[in-house]
Length: 233
Image 1 (spheres, rainbow, N blue to C red):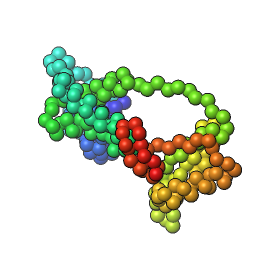
Image 2: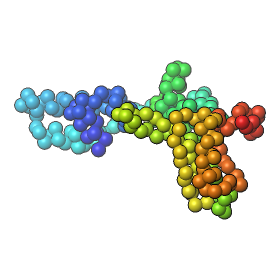
Image 3: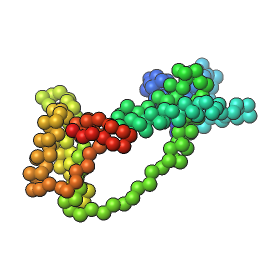
Image 4: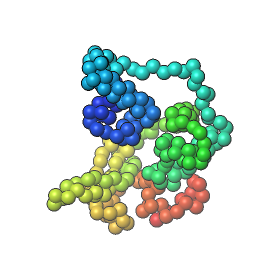
């Protein structure tokens, strides 16, 4: 099915090989091979030397790979140390509320290549996947009563206003018991909007929860004093 999609997208729909690579994560070398084989069979058919059935089979048949001379994966201790370094950076960014700045697998692979390491993208992905599976978090189920805990977070929605699309900030309150949602839209995430959303929610439910939970958003956390201690606004 991947081979069919590559041929259809690349030849019939006019997508670039780089565009197909970004969508499928299949190596560009493989994409070039599929398209080249198809074009060769098609040329034979147009010149009257080919068979339409063979062309159809070329699309449907998976490629066969000769692994007899395949070299050993170049995952050295030095490269592992660099990948672990980037994973450590990601963990620090998650901890300090910068999750959107994390490096993806493809970013880590690109950084390794720029540093001069000879390593394939699939090898990097496999190592990271196995590494993260070793560190799976354990979750403890908690029980709440009504009025105990509510969580606050920012989100955003895209709305069409006067014929133009605009990104609008959305303050969201979610109760731990019952998973009740309350949301209000704002033009920004400033302190005034942050406080106003709380007042509106408290008025809406007719009271204040015992505990309000926040992530490390800048409007709530002024700075980190240590790795675990933070100074709130």
